[in-house]
Amino acid sequence: MRKAFLPAAGVLVACLFASGWYTWHQWRQRLLAPVVRAAVPPVPDLVGWPREYAARVRGATAAASRLEQPLTALSELACLYHANGCYREAQQVERGLHALEPKNAQWSYYLADSCQNLGDMEGTRTFLEKTLQLAPYYAVTRLKLAELFLKQGLTDEAFRQYDWRLALVPNDPYARLGLARIALSAGNRAEAVRSLETIARTSPNFSPAHNLLAELYAQTGDQARATEQRLLGSAAGRFIEANDPLLYKVYAWSFDTYRLEVQGGNRLQTRQLEASLPFYQKAVRLAPQDGSVWDALGNVYQQLNRLDDARAAIEAGLAAAPKTPALYATLAQMLRQQNRIPDAIAVLQRGILQLPALPELHTALGAVFEEAGRHEEAAAAYREAARLNPDSAEAYRNLGQALLGAGRKADARQALDRGLTLAQQAHDSDSITRFQQLLAEMAK
Image 1 (spheres, rainbow, N blue to C red):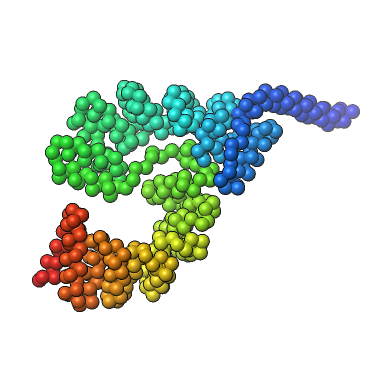
Image 2: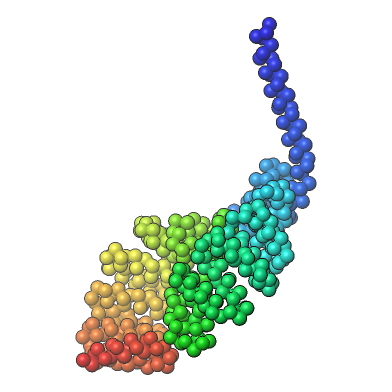
């Protein structure tokens, strides 16, 4: 009798547990329902957007409205809207998610970004400060809050946040640049210069520090150091935003090819080649007729030494967009690296048939002919480039050097003299120096 009672008791406990769970679940759904429904914005006009994006927005909207896994549906909707610049809709969804998951720093951080993009500075500050409470060691929040304070003229508050950022990210160039600007605003030029020189030493690829240093050196009459810093700033490349994993996470939801290329480019600039690849792969899927996107993807594969994939991407781009000059140049460069000179020549000639008036392709063809020792053919290609772009000093320099290689010294001098004149008219000191060096070597 006792043995029969035990299984029955187990079944009874299980039933009671299931019943209790179901009652709790229904009660929770009733509490969540108004918050979820208030978080779902009307679907905006999606004309012109990729079909996949429109379908996913409508699907997530419908699922959230039906209270079907509402947190999952709202999360997808928030990311879709935010990653594609629909900040007003994103903000509505994110406010709902913040109410449903108040301890999740992701939603307060996305809300800060939505507010910033909508021009709501008070909202930006509120949600950045909330994010700091929830995730005090997410260092980019300190940086964004410092920059906001600096714009508002709250330099003491900005200083504290930059100082915190430096504690979390030692030698951080973004924080040091902010501290340099605060020093300048207080009239402390020497302190600003010290901060900027530290950045130039510890983060030589951080262009804003070089550019600001150049200005400060120029103001004190130190033109030599100013010129040096300008050159270093130019070599460092474009400015890149500070690393922001939370925003990078949402950008993966983008269906805007421009945004995808920007994110891919940011990672390329910091040599995160593998991390950049998915952005370009998605971009070509969304815009298969855009040759420049195929070219970017091919270049990433090339840098990863995945040459078969690189060539396949470029050939796919040429099939889709045969009027894209960069694709011919990139493919020819790849073939040159593989020592396939005849194939590189054939690719560029194919490009010239498509785009006969483009001097860049004739210049690239001339360079390949020169590499093959075919100087007369190189000169012919450069001459055509110079005809198409008669104001280009570089075209005449290329032509002069090819003619020298062909042993046609008098013709080479004529081309170089013309190039020197163009360089002087353009006040291009570097080109003038190169021409003068070439002409001096010919005179020996």
